[in-house]
Length: 231
Image (cartoon, rainbow, N blue to C red):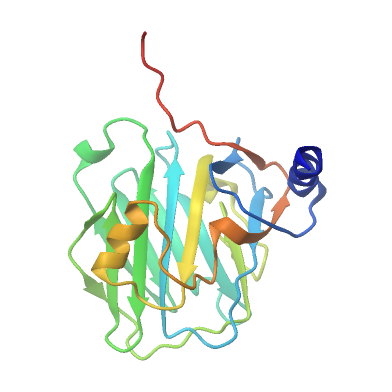
């Protein structure tokens, strides 16, 4: 059984076919800047989105702007985008608008794993950004907006067309893990659960049962998040 599982893992990683598996304690590694390398995700979406929450961990020593998460529809290639313009700045794009979150530079003094959660709800337009388990002041945009469920979702690139149009200068270099998305805005208690490595019910993108496809130079490997200590 172990040999079968390893074979499946290697096949999914290099074949470019769609796979579904539990990626607990694994990471997607984006080794170099590229206008082709990315991971495609297929969510279980049946209805238009009137709210969402996206959570993920990322690790990079990049200082240039880059895209972590891109959700494009056939009418809007920036329907949902999580974009990091500077080490201490994140932007969330929804529809035709965006909000910018800035946090103190000392929080990113050296490369480390960062956990982010971003949520939006149509009813109020409220946007929440949680960094490493702590919320920043809320913003608002696109009240009353609805998001088509017919989407192309990409990790590591910004789509300037549906499933394509990548820009090497906005590509991600580093590691991504524990990617989740819900079709609702999580409560503050649920945000804390995600930070603590628990998973609130019914994610539409589920790292523990991820439907994904690797394109070009992205490598799936075990996480190296543990720290060595001298004996």
